[in-house]
Length: 635
Image (cartoon, rainbow, N blue to C red; front, side, top):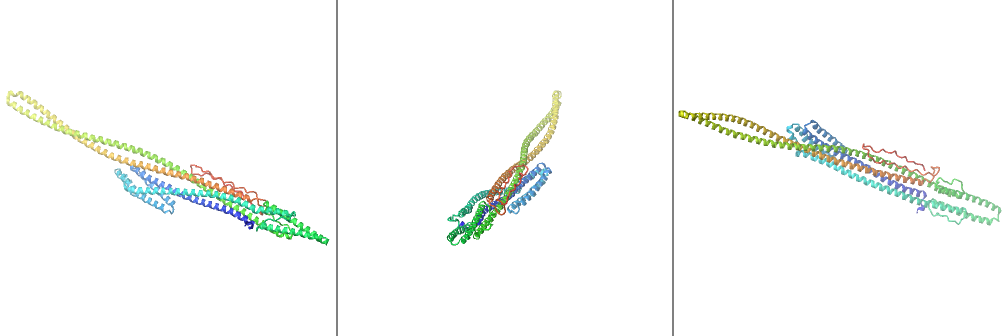
């Protein structure tokens, strides 16, 4: 069947097959590169939203810390920081809204977060700042910020932030898997395309050689035998329907003409005896025909030799005998069709190489952008590490403050216990003073009775006369002793009363001291609880920042892997370009009207040096090498 197809159509069909394979591979790779670029843009969006979620969580935590700092110190600096961190939160929220675009689910999460955070600021933070400004209302402010109402605002806000961050991380991971799949498909397509081009090129080249060169050489050998006079030689390829078949039919006509000429020569020899003039004329005619035949055979032989050498500009332009004119025209038409087909193939190969060059440039640009993204992520990881260290330091300071507050609370409680024992001792002293007063009263009563008895004894001694004088003296001494005892008891009673009054005042002072110490213990307890809350929040904040830093570091690693895959894709595209240059070299052996000599083998385009991914620490990407110019030569 192929024998009846024109040579130009055979060559055009072969190169059309190669062109379709190359275009199919190039189109598939270009589609995958476009899909990879779109996926990377989505990755950047998810990474940005994830980082913004971490920033918003950080701003919320700093708001709470500033509020607690104001409650501890009542320094206006901290109250201003609460509002400043709220403005920072608003800025991050606006940036997240802009980045989300028309994604309704993300906007809904951001709206819930905005509503909860605004409610916490208006209902909790601002009232707490007003209460904490008054030292007497510090406990009330602390109760407000730790109330269930405060939790009803903060917990949903934190859940919204965490949900946004986790959702964007899941989307980022899904995008990474999609990019890996696209890269794998691109590598497979390049490998299959390269293998298909190599196999198709070899098979088509071998087929063209068998379909064109071998029949031409066989036909040339048959013509040489005919020129040497071997008219019994069979002319091959007469059954073919292409240009070679047409030339074979023309050679068969030449053979039949030669046979007819021999027959005529035989008839001429038979009739030579009849007419010498006729023989001379016939001899001249035969000689002319022989010369025409020899000249035509030499021209055909030279044309086929140049054609077998790849010179498609060969034409039989010289004059030939009328009987050979159809052969000359058929030869010229066949070679012209072959030249047009080869020229079209050369142009198609050039177009393919140009397209592969554009793919190489696009893949190189994509590699550079991926490298720049990796460097930016590296800077983000470094910044998050610095913030994490600062938060860890804050947590350590808060922990030490918590320990100091706990120690102060224990010391205040011990002081309160000592004051309680002092109050108890003063109460016992007061009771003892009362008992002593009672005893002194008894002594005073005894002295009064003794004085009365001594007075009665003196009266009785006076009645007794001389016999009672001694008893009167004793009674006088007893009376004097009783009076001194009464005076001493009165003085002691006065002193005991003053002591009881002073002891009562001391008891009241010690009781007041105990109550003050109880209040101090309560305040120290509230301070310790507040500091414990600060330490807990700082630890949670440090943990959250560590998770964000880990996620950003993972993003950095994934981006570097993406850059490596893009480099592999670029290298594969460059390899395909080199193989296309080899295909162009196969066609360069043919000379066409556009070149005066067989075209030299086109120099393959030098592989583009793909920049190696490196970290700069300053967000700069590796410098892009100058693109190597592809050297082209016309065929």
